[in-house]
Length: 497
Image (cartoon, rainbow, N blue to C red; front, top):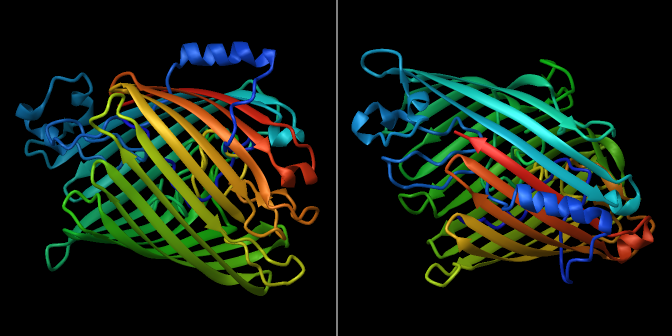
């Protein structure tokens, strides 16, 4: 199992704590942190990907996905293809004699500990907590119609700070939708979907699931996907769901909506190499920038080329955004790349990777025209376990290296350096709120981060992870408030089938 490089231009989600970077050795942690680090390293010795290993053999289980509804277990209808795994009777439950009606069930149980010292570079109290969540699901197929339901049960313990929408939602419905597959001329298929679901587009840089936080981000709305042998076109109108504390009280947002047409052309049969072109529209009645707050309508046009030949992988993306903010014009842009190489026949199977991106900021806060790119709904752990800032007004460079002391263990060391793209704009958290205004400093360098992560896929269903991160502040942070080094330890156990 390998740890993929974090994707580049991805855009925000919520997390109060820090992000990662790195150009110097990990600072020595205080004595009070050493027992925590030892416990995390002992209880969750390795930082693994949340997904099971990928298999290209149709007779083995498909890759376990984050959203779960894209998994296809219908091959279990053939008893000869079964391998005797205890979960197989739960993944395919025939409900009629010919197999056209069947049920798939599954579950994710996750506990994640995060401990922070010098939150917001010392401007906020230290914090530590445990996120717990349980996400069972049922997937009923009736011919060409399917009904999918995934409730979520969450809690957070160990902290008395105010709880945010990514911390806990009690008991609620994370996903619940119906879709139908229709044949169209030319051999393509059209899938129409309505309801609540987790959604990710392309590499997840503008639309993603906020999976790494306590509560993922679902959307309510309608989606249509036209799929052929070598191409796919997705169109949708969606509204993000406001997750709230309490049971069964999550509702779609009245302030935000997105709509999109997203097309992919694959260059190979395995769909590992291809090209995307897309348009995404956004309406936000309460967008917030260093310039102020107001209604924003943004139109984002972008493209991406991606590929993976087994050893070398790449992902290059660029986007242009224009629209209005608070009644005036807005215009932003962003570009980034991610590339890496796997030395598959070398001892420890080392991997090296480099990601970099540049995301526009506002050039003049007193000019009503806004120049900051809005990243919409990016991943909740955009730059890694420690992500105190998000992809607005940012230049980011991230080299990393990974080794595999065992086939199911990955040890990764990552360094990140951050600069402001515009010295006239501030820095922002992943959810979009302002972290530090840019009005009190003309320094460009924000800081650097270092993260050590260990990952162990103990079994195809059990994943254990741990990480240690620091964020060393640069001149901009020192000019604008408290400037202590952020320190973070994290550990996670995830069971999924």
